Amino acid sequence: MYVVDSPIALLDEILDNLVTELQLTQTQFGKAKQSYEAVGEWLNAVGSGLDTFAPQVYPQGSLLIDTTVRPLQRSEFDLDLVCEVDDVSFTPDELFGLVHDRIAAHGRYRQMMERRSRCIRLNYAGDFHLDVVPAIGRRSRPTGSTAIQIPDRDRACWHSSDPKGYARWFEDRTAARRRTTTKVGGVQPLRLPQASSEKAPLKVAVQLFKRWRDVTYTTSVFPAPSSIVLTTLAGAGYMGEEEPVSTMSAVLRYCVEWMANGNRPLMNPANLDECISEPWLKQPDAFDAFRHHLQSFSHAWHAIVTARYADLATKLGTLFGDPAKRAFEKFASDRRDARDQGGLYVAPTSSGMLAVGAASAAVKVQPHTFFGREDEDDRST
Amino acid sequence: MIGLRDQVSHVKMFFPRFSAWIKNGELISVGELQPTPLSDTYRVRIKYRVGKTPQVHVLSPALMRPDGVSLPHVYPGERLCLHLPKEWTNDHSLGRHLIPWIAEWLFFYESWIATGSWLGGGLELHAKVE
Image 1 (spheres, each protein chain N blue to C red):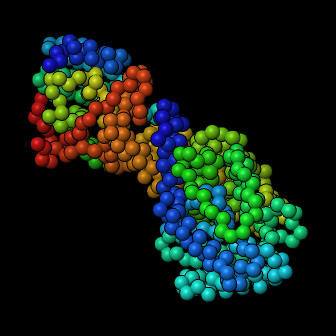
Image 2: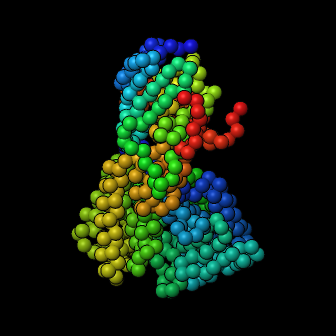
Image 3: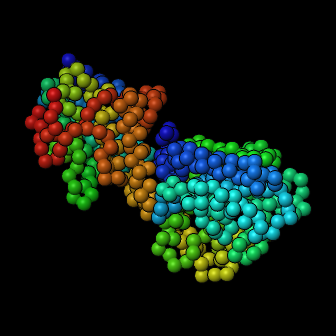
C-alpha cells in the first residue's frame, strides 16, 4: 500500500492492484516455472538428439520482461520459451523437425502439443500455453550477440529475431540496471514476477496498455496491434517518470503524437531488419482504427486523472474491464484489514483523510462494528 | 464518564477544524471530512447528550443511492450507524472514537458507490447481537 496523500498516490495504488489482477499470480508462476524447467530438461537431456548442439533454453517476450497479461477470453496465459542450438547448418525445416520430434518423443507432451508456424505449442489446459520456439544463432553474428533465426514453417525460411536483445533494450528504457547475460548452456532460470508496487512503472503501463487493447478490440473488426508494437511505443515514449499514473500519461502523449505523424515503418529496436508495423502498412484502415481508439483512450485517461473517487471505478472499468472493480475492492478491504489490525488512522489536519500507518497528530480508528439498516431503527435515542 | 464540556475539549483537541458547542444540555459539533484525496468533502453534524447514542448526520452533499438501493449502515433519516450499541459508553470520546469512525464510514460509503459492496465489515440490525 502507498501513503495515499495525493490523488496520484491513490490512483497509483488502484493501478497496482489492477495490474496484480492481470498478471501471473505467484502460484501460476510457480506452475509455469516447473513446466518450463521440465521442458528445458527434456530438450537438454543426454540422448535428446538436441544435446549435441548445446541447446540454450530461455524465456522470451512478456515472461522475460515481466509484462504478462491474462488473455481476455480464456484463462491460459501465453508464455514463450526459446530453444537455441549451436549448429548453423540446419535448414528451417530440419531444425523445426528436430525440436518437434524431441517433444513428441515424450508421452505426455505428445498429448498436449500443437504444431504452429514458428513454434510447438504445449497446452497446459486451464493454466497456460507454453510455446517452444526453435532457434539458431544468426549467421556471422559477432561474439556476444544474441541475434537468432527462427524457422518459419509457412514461408519455409528463417525469421530474424533477438528476444534477449529486445529485453535488454526494454530494461534499459525502464532505467533498471541489468547485467548483460553471458551465453550459458542448459536451462536459464526464470526470474520471479515482481509485486506490482515494486515494479518499474513502465512495466505497469505496458500491462495496462495491453489490457486496454484486449478490451477495446473485442468489438473491433480490425486486427489488434501486437504486444511488441505497444511495448516498443511505450518504451520509446517513457522519459523516466517515477510512478504509473504519469508514466501512462507520458506513454499516451507519445503514442498519440507518433500516430499523428502517419502510417510508417516501426522497426524492432533490437532487430533493425524487422518492421513490426508491417500489418499497418498492409492494412492502413487498421492503422486509422488504432489512431482513433488511442484518441479515445487518451480522453478517457484524462477524465480518470481528474475523477472523483466514487466515479473512478466505473471509468476504469470501461477501459480495463472487471479487474478494475476488484482493484477498488482490494483498496477498500486493505483499509478494513488495517483497521482490524489497529493500523488505520485519520489525519485531523487534512480533513480526516484516512491513512495506513501513524503520522504526526494522526488519530487511530478504534475497533468498532458498523451496524444498522435504513428501514429499521435501534430506538436508542 | 466524559461530560459535555470535556467532550467539547476532546473534539477540539483531536480535530481542531471541527466546531463544537453546548446548547440546552446538548453538544453540537460540525466539521468537514474528506476520507481520500479524491473524495468529496462532507459536512457532518454530531448531536450528543450524555447517556444517549451520538446522532450523526451528513449535511452535504446528499448521500446517493445508486439504482435506488437502500444505504447500508444508516438508520431512518440517514442517521449514520457507526457502532454496536455496546460499543458506545459514557467513557467514549467524540474526538478519539466517533469522528474517526465517521471518516471511515464515508470512505466505505464511497467504496460502496464504486463497487456495489460494503467493504468495511459490520452487522445488519436484525443480526443477533450479544
